[in-house]
Length: 222
Figure 1 (cartoon, helix red, strand yellow):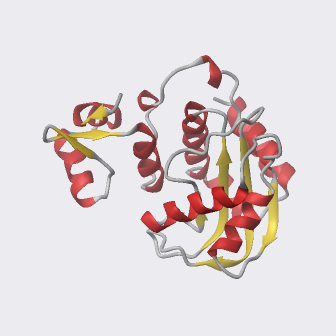
Figure 2: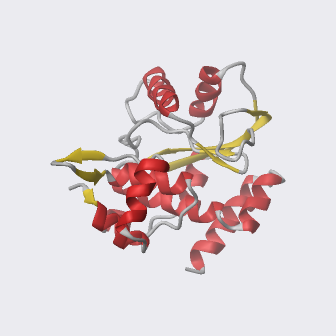
């Protein structure tokens, strides 16, 4: 079920007029049904992440599948890559996706690259501060035993038309077994990226073990 303007306003603690302004001026994706705006949860969460808004738990559906979900575990599974280089966007995504543990997912990597590139043509997935979260138009849901998040540090910055004008040097890619898990992990990643200590780890390209340990510590403190 899609969300109404009133649902979004209540979730973010703003007025209905503010939500309408987000649609008209802030490029918040919406569809019109009987002259009323309707919002897809996935698109709303992505937009909020790109605009660095706090993610309200009310837009995340509940479910047993997210019990015990850990961003640190997902990153440990997906891995961290350093010094990634590429000649163009296609090569960059190919290199980033290459490290994702997709062997058991029965998926063609070129198809995934095409999906990622199609999404990028709709608008940048850079969120600012040198970070981008490339992803297909809709969450990448694959037959994985557990969710995977891959962190890639680039050997030189790329211009992806980030909202703050900064070139990106850090990528996060996600592959999850369900849409709900994808939304939960994206919300946790957005929260982590708002933490200055975590951002400092990314800036200095800390060892993978240190980054994962910091996420575990933050999750344990919740």
